[in-house]
Length: 110
Image 1 (cartoon, rainbow, N blue to C red):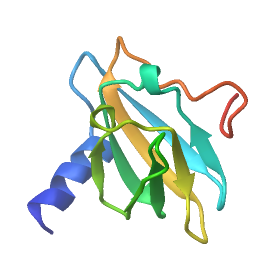
Image 2 (cartoon, one colour):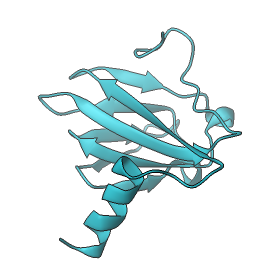
Image 3 (tube, one colour):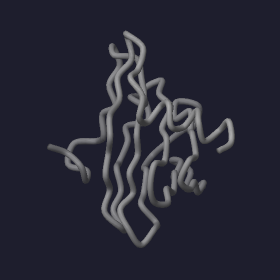
Image 4 (tube, rainbow, N blue to C red):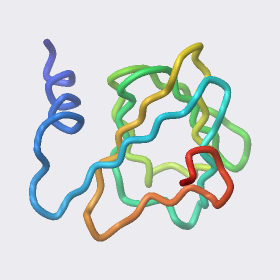
């Protein structure tokens, strides 16, 4: 196991320090979570399973596989899309006072 794998495992599975929260998002193949650019939290998103395509408002994209740790607020994000054949599982770790809010009506809304 590499140090990156153990850091990823700690964010995904272990108890978080006080003041932090964890949110798990599952996205079906071909679907996306729309994100309001001015509401992206200061969070680290870990790709636990599947393949993530992160699309910026200008249309440029980046692809991330399992174990990738993405400081999501550092990117101008428009949507997070599942480009793999199976489910995409994302784990967002953020301050308990912040929220990760997908755009109303996007996949994954309750």
